[in-house]
Length: 113
Length: 116
Image (cartoon, rainbow over all chains, first blue to last red; front, top):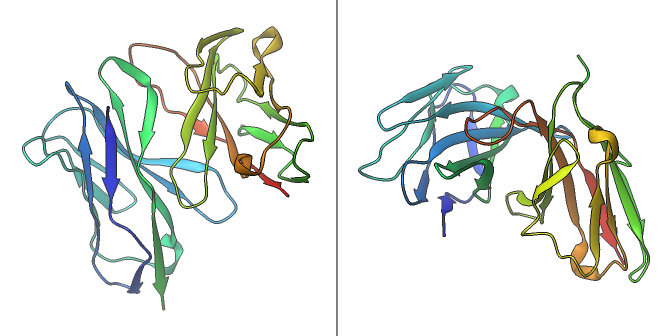
């Protein structure tokens, strides 16, 4: 079945460092891909999405490119802030069941000043 | 605009006891989801409603779990009896449309259940 694999955390960075969180997927057809973020004590929020190959999703300085050839959707940010500390989830929805989100296990990011 | 509201935020019960979680979706959202998030894992869909109808409950353990969405607005998820393995965070989400096109799902803060 469809699945998402993302790098284990925690990822610990100093402020202004470059961030990469790896995400790969397994799916039939052409899934849509998402990154969700969960700040402490809050619900998950959609951070960005991409619905077809080579699309780049971006929001709040974060970017991810849908790479079908490598089945990847890595999250990047050029300069992280302390306020980016959160848990980040990669997710997909299949082309035949667009309402069902399949999540990865999440990666905790800790940014220190 | 108010977000998805869930209550209670935390619940501790002994095994074999019943428990219920309540969710109030964003006004006007016709699709409602219940997810379970085990510690260190991503959320997993339990059930999806479109209005009052449960259109996907394939992952709901029906021997002990039940859900309802009366009048197509609020929803309640119940576990009876609870088992130790049910300890998790139960998330509710809502979106404005159903199948065919992705509409953003808005998540509530969740209910953290601990079964002792």
